[in-house]
Length: 123
Image (cartoon, rainbow, N blue to C red; front, top):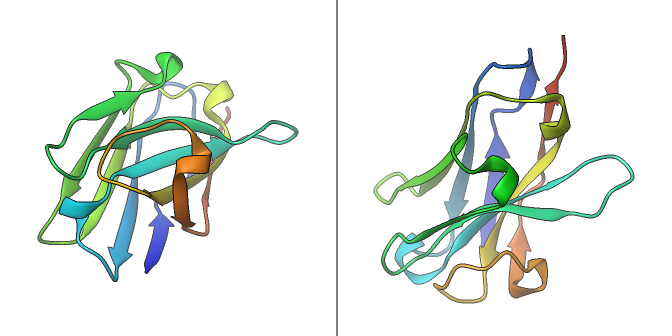
């Protein structure tokens, strides 16, 4: 099982980025995929996730209406579209495979993690 996150970078406040999580070794239908982030000096927190079975989604309150998670089953990729970015969105973003197909923001319910991609929102 492998997950590889990409798409991070430097963006001005109000800008947009799209993160990608390319997965291999399993089928997206069988497992939920979550996006987490960790800012300097803070704990890793759940941002969004998408279920494996029915595509149900979850968003942390601070990103609702700004971030959109989606997946391309044929391409084995999960995306996180981030709009109206704020300085407080600055963090290393990780994607992870859940233990099951159900969504969860609890990082202990995820077992395989990608390497992370840095998002910096600054003018």
